[in-house]
Image (cartoon, rainbow, N blue to C red; front, top):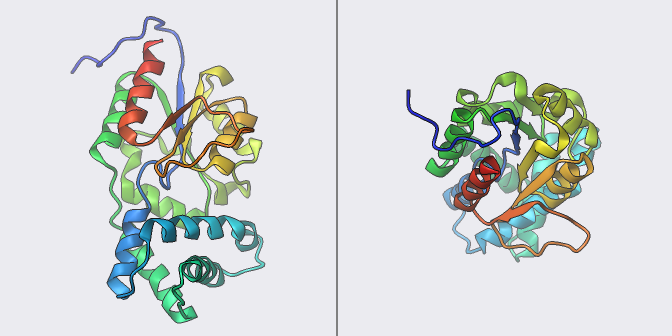
Length: 245
């Protein structure tokens, strides 16, 4: 078998590396953009549209989870409101059709080669791997299967919020993962794109948070990060340095 790329000077040190799914293991904007362009011929700033849809998704996430909104209403709301902010007005039917097209595109999700290299590196070097992702159980497990991450990450170490009725940034969902992986807090790293859910949640749990900041957002003064990566190439370099410590 191939030798690991790096060998730790601290052979007994346990490292836990846990990932978010959406916009971390893959970029959600890709299937989102395809869905819009397949259905509509109206110009729109796609990056802004996507980011606004994520904002409105967070606004009503709790309402969708506790039954105040059904899932169709939730999906219509986030797409309509995001488009409206950019001067594009979609009917309920158009917004729902876009959601259906978006979901269909998510069946063809793929991780980039660099993301696969990160997972290979971690597995070769006995870094304990996990996933914590927010969302309905069926929907998030579908994405996990589509991405094929169980090749590197044991199914028992994949935590979907819909299975536990607990969502990031609630510390309890991080504690569930810590119980599974066992490394001490200071050796647990969480990689995610959402400041509110991923970074704040990991910080509150005492983990080291690595922020995937693809859209170059400003870091609020009251939020700490261990490291910031603007893409997964930078993330790979950060992870290699963690292992070499």
